[in-house]
Length: 144
Image (tube, rainbow, N blue to C red; front, side, top):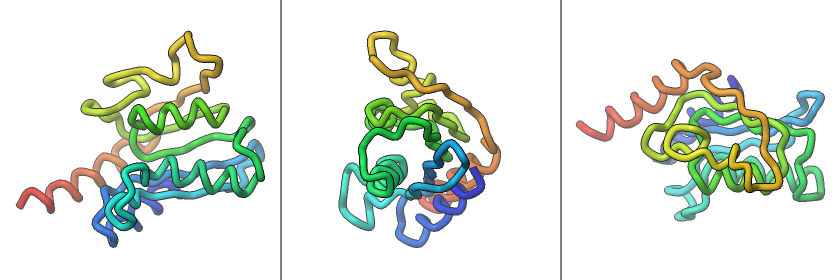
């Protein structure tokens, strides 16, 4: 999660919401990293999770990320939760809950939907205080 927080902090320099993600394999080796790049790249799919999943798939040479863990600083939205399911990750770890758009238990629960053919394990609230503080600081600066 500390690596994901470092990615989130790097997004601050581009004006993007500070969300970071990391994909690690079963041995803990980093396969992909990502931060929000929606503003920087003018890309609506430029979420940290999607960026990290794409990088990890490229590193592996396949789209199936079985045996991997996606670590992200904020509870994924519906798009990112869906991408995690489709990538067949084994585990999803996130920091802060997102009551407005979270799709891993807060507003929706995409990853635990029994109708889907894959459901990753979920570990929530890891370094949530740090993740929330980074987001709160970003949005406080925007509201002035």
